[in-house]
Image (tube, rainbow, N blue to C red; front, side, top):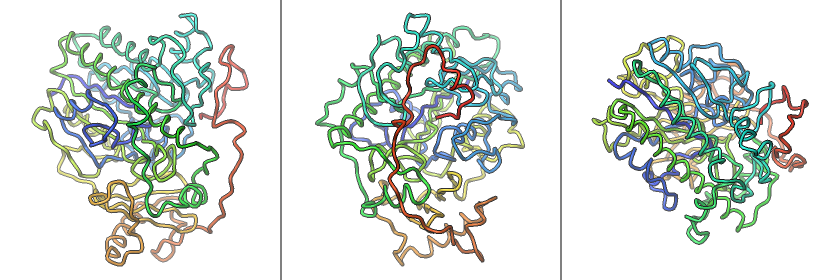
Length: 480
């Protein structure tokens, strides 16, 4: 039984963006080795592919239905959390990096949190990274690169290498491990804010990729008007950003570079576990809150149920996982299953509030449900995925075994009518609250259709500005 757990979470990392998942370009040697020495779950999904609700599911083991959030609005967390469950069992629990909770300094059960919140000053809290940047003589300069947190323009990091947030978060976790109480087991939560935009990789990592080798985005035969008619009208944001083919290649290169940077930094953590003599007793888990469409099917960002956005990595590795070495599990699981799985591996009682299941227990998920409040949801049984947009009562069906990139929509193919009907029934059975208004006499009827309209982008996709001194008008603002 492992004595320690290291849970690594990134932001915006698609499940297929790993060398071990067959991606032809991205370089992830560390994660590939962790997968070879452990188990990779390739049908693993975000309960809600946007930061706040996804992280609530990760930290509580609860579905959005029960933790109360399927939108990107930070809320208090009055539930038994994953770190609190570990602490109740005698563990010390420390977090470093992005938390995205309310209030921002809430520890949600951790002994301590070293915070890096991507320039968010809501609620009056300044992150430890921002404080440290000021101490290094770079006060307020974190966003002088001029790139936005929610678009895909790119340039290299503008300050010395050691000031990059990915390096800083790694260094703080190294220090947390060194400061541990050696007489007690540990739970560590390492939460990187990248590869989420801004796309500002270190120059050395961007140089690892040439534009000529960057793979082109793929587009399904159903996706000609998808950005206009599905993303927007059916409830998601309509893209008001315009990119040339060159800019798209540059964005994908920068994104891959930020992934490789994280991959290499994880090696420092593993090395520290080894030098401290606790590596052999530590389970290492790697995941993300959600993915990123990265221009596939003509779309960007998250909030969608296609594989790029909703499917995320989950790897369990380390010497305590030796019996699963080199395996791939294709059963459907989601972020709410992480808490019960890690507790189960450590022999800790799973709280009654948890909705998820242990991935090593006898019970299996019939389907996993993912949702964005009021706009879209999906049911996946591991092979087939049904996506539903209530606006316009629009459904899509994909066979992930034979069509992993979702190039062909089988929704109107009569050969798949029974499969669609079975998934629809299972999806409706999971509806709650206002979702029940989308159903009449047991059938999906949805909401009236709407016409898409391209909106303005006066704020340039949530562009950050000056960060010093802190603008009082930002205090209490909604998270972006």
